[in-house]
Amino acid sequence: MFSAAAGPLPSSLASGGVRQVLDPSTLLGAPASVRAAAVFLLTVLFGGAVIYRYGNRLDAAVDASMANPLLSVIYGLIAYGLVVFFTVYAYSQVSRLGVATTALTVLAVVVLGALLFTLGGLGFVVVGAWFTDALGVRDPWVGLVGVGLLGAVALFVLPTALGLLVWVAIAAVGVGGPTRRWMHADAAEVHG
Image (tube, rainbow, N blue to C red; front, top):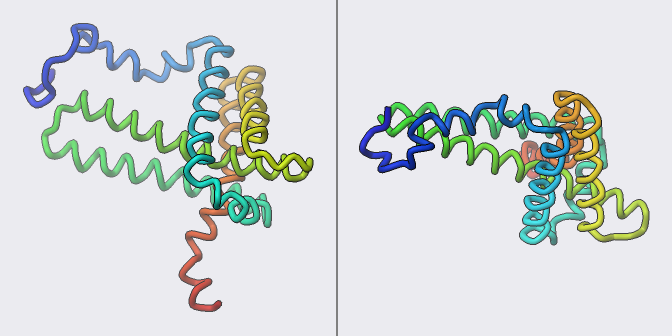
């Protein structure tokens, strides 16, 4: 089941514990309050990292996303699709090298989750910053926590699939503007 390259694993992982942890029914079977709290904490954690690292670029991202929010949703979904595509592609290529599949699967799920929550954090920061700017507060942390709570409440109150759809839609609005600018940057440089 495991190659020597994987190294020794704890007995709980070697006996199928990894599959149980990575099984979507384990995550989706958790109570709604646990899912909502986990998503809220991860959203604020990754969003906080975005504020810390890229806070000086926040105004440009807000302007890009709020220039056309409906178009931003489409480009945000494209960004999510690109992340999933390239992660799955990298996983398929590395798995051909004969790397231990269990360890590689765990790594791929962790990387994919981190990338998706980083995009989500960016999206929630941008939407939150726009919201607080509209209210005159101008504090991205307040916006992040407020919009993160909104996403967590959606996951708590709505059925799981609909709650995830709301969470992704909120994040897609914030991610879409910077994605659109990035995708069309060459055309803007040529014509500008």
